Length: 363
Image (cartoon, rainbow, N blue to C red; front, top):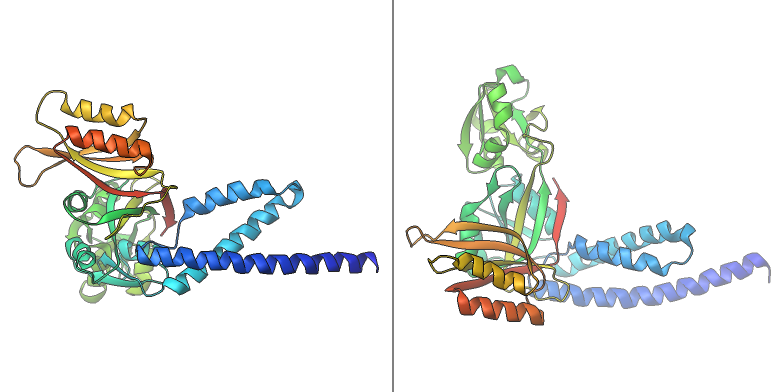
């Protein structure tokens, strides 16, 4: 046997083993897909993927082929995600708005094989999951420029659904107009209030008056159907293509970075030892030092609050609840002890969801 034949024999043996383990891996992927389907979880989990790649590349002792192995891993994960999507296709995902809205873009990227279903308001989209019409809802909860989406945070705190993932959509706002319209033609712009806030500097510099709409896609649709060249819309590039509008100016939002965090909520909370973050809502007694003591309980157990905000309670004048994102796993032994002690001190404590990390997606 020549050296070439020997090498080809080794490749054939390796291919045989790869095929055997490929089948084992895909069988495990189908079990993951079944779990995700039962718990209304998205296929996409970039945190898990990045952690696996970082771990698995260390198994390769030959540094010359380590980058090739990383590419091999990424291709394998893409196949796994495709297989998962096939197995769990048909999940019904609620969002507020119409096709082309940023929530629609986010939902399609998180659930590429899902049945994405529009609702006229955040409340109706949320309720569609509560009553079983849909499996999950994708809701915006915070923008890097305009701040929190207070009504949605209040709905999450008072409602029964759980956050099972946080996805950060990097957003570029664009000025759209009728075909042939120029910047000097635009006297008024229609968009969602948060998009208007995020583009305030551009609008002021160009003497363009803002007009609010339910969301960016509806604004674009309105301009397309009934407005003249003097009216524009602030929306995504995808929306321009959908409604036959031209992009007059790209990236008109203030600052280079603009992102919106979307929460994926479903009826059951996802419990996983890999979860590194969780959301908590709580109230404290109206007395000196109460908030500090609640925060100390969290800190004493080694948990770090990445963010804490106050929100007014709807039915109690000048009373507030606190909404916080915490590093750690609430289902660990330490997490359970912390929650138990916090519940003994606070009038109300709600575990709102848990997840592995913030996943970044591009618009």
